[in-house]
Image (cartoon, rainbow, N blue to C red; front, side, top):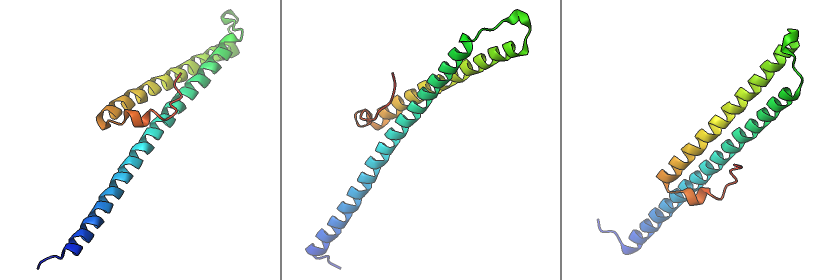
Amino acid sequence: MIMKSSDFFRDARVRFFRVEAEAMRWREQLQMIGAEFGRTVRYFESFAKIWTKMAVQHQSDAVDLDSGSIADVAQLGRQAYALKRAHWNEFWRAGVLARFKDTAKQCNTLQDWAQFDWGTS
């Protein structure tokens, strides 16, 4: 069966537009991943700041360890927990940024992802 040239061009156009649509979906997916990286970084950064602020608030309260008061010991425990959570969030923020850099290099999308507000200070 011999294909007419009009059928060939019609089929080629259909293939072209299908491939173009697939490329657009890939670009959109890369943009969504970049935005998700940015949201994740901002999340961990904001919670690290919140926990650090809480630790400072607990540190500013007067604690007398010689009194043996459970409230004073609990105050130190709250401060230690807040510092631990702040460190944990900062650790994960740094990990996400490292993964972002690796992924951006592999996908060659660093310039595309630079447009997102990463919230890093």
